[in-house]
Image 1 (tube, helix red, strand yellow):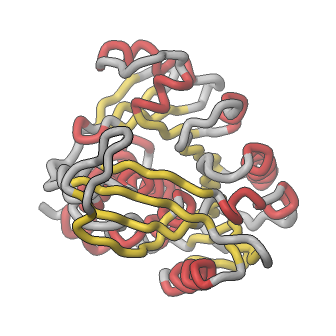
Image 2: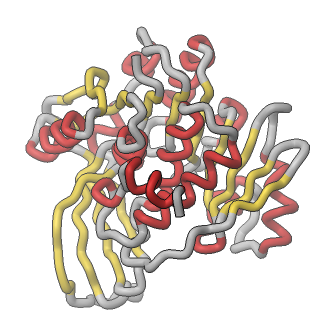
Length: 302
């Protein structure tokens, strides 16, 4: 049995390091280039597994070199890949990442096989788990079916609303815990521009749709806010030297899910997830940057 089941995307990231991100119509010279594993689902599954929590992945890859590399990596990380589908004649998902010297990034994602993940792939014989985790890089009807099956199994449903997708609003009510960043909050709250702290605290609770539901809004270097119907709690960020923010949100969400599965209450789980993300941003890459449980255990003692 897996304690966390992750339904989501698997991508190969093509990472170009640049001095700064290009302006529209501008060409900049790359400093370095590499392939690395990514996709929100894969990143979060590896973040969970590195916490020592039994983790299973549900997703789809192409029958190509990238697909074989990604499933091989998951198995090496002790993630159960029984439910990862291999599609003939379809390419594995691809993300083109530009990383600036400041640590900021710009990403274009090609869904590839991720778009083929079907309702049947997720709803049939869903394994029992404590936490069921999804993002928005697979078809919306598939995510809905995944959470419906998870409810039948009696698990806690966690939805990371990344990236914000038009038409996904109905999925918010299906999750027990919602995780989103400031940009995603603005989208779902109907705001056209970025929000200040006062606006975030005012609008966050409005997205709660069920009595026991919780919403976590990640604020980057500022920390995170946890909203429930009865309380708002601030989670301070752990200071970090930023090298690459790619995958930081996935690290937070994956470690949060793992911590919930281990029985931690939400504020405790969020603080542990914040510490993990502070380690991830100090490293290059997405999946490769996820910390291991020993690193967090060491930080707990300081």
